[in-house]
Length: 147
Image (cartoon, rainbow, N blue to C red; front, side):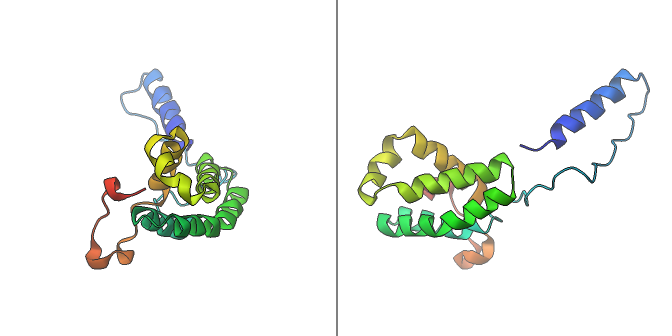
């Protein structure tokens, strides 16, 4: 979760309560604030393996799906250790979940598991859309065709 919206609301609230006709300028963020990871979807190094896992899942290749999530696991773990954001922690948790599923459990989990749905939302939210250079002909992926 980013702190910018809260800071913006505080700045707007103080400008409104000051009774001035013009809003006060919003102070620049403090240099002591922790830097957030790149907010653009799909920029995490773990996402390349996650996207490959999603592609394999969509093709019904569950063993290969798991292999990609297992490959993403140490990357996501390193990212989560370096980045205390909720997003990094969530991605690591999602990768761990998909890496631990058995191939035979994937179809049923995809249909009925609340955890599968939760982690699907996380991986799609953070690792998709796929960068255009990875798509043939610059196609835009359809969320319905992703994990």
